[in-house]
Amino acid sequence: MGKAAKCFVYIDRRQRATEAGKSTYVVVFDSFNIRPKSATFQLHNRASDIVFQAELFLLRDNSVRLKINEASPLVLRYEAPVGDVLAEEPQTQR
Image 1 (tube, helix red, strand yellow):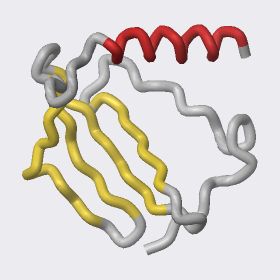
Image 2 (cartoon, one colour):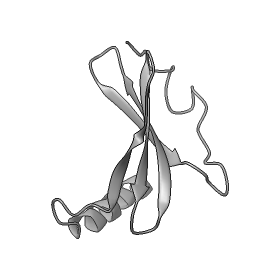
Image 3 (spheres, helix red, strand yellow):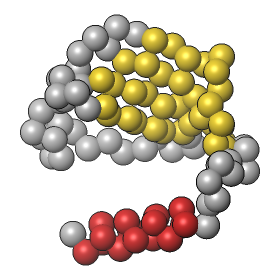
């Protein structure tokens, strides 16, 4: 738990330097794909020229789940299997 708290503080400090309305991320509008239970789109970081794939889910408890990964990673990101972090896969709705 201590590592997570340090990581959160680190992220908070990094974001403090960002001025409102001065984000380096832009949405690639041509990449929107709306599916019955999710929507996908790409984010482009203009500073580092990296493209990310974002997936947005509407959950049954009126909350959203956002997953973001690099669109073309050199190494695939590890995803914890269901049961390690989540008790079960979150229930989505249309």
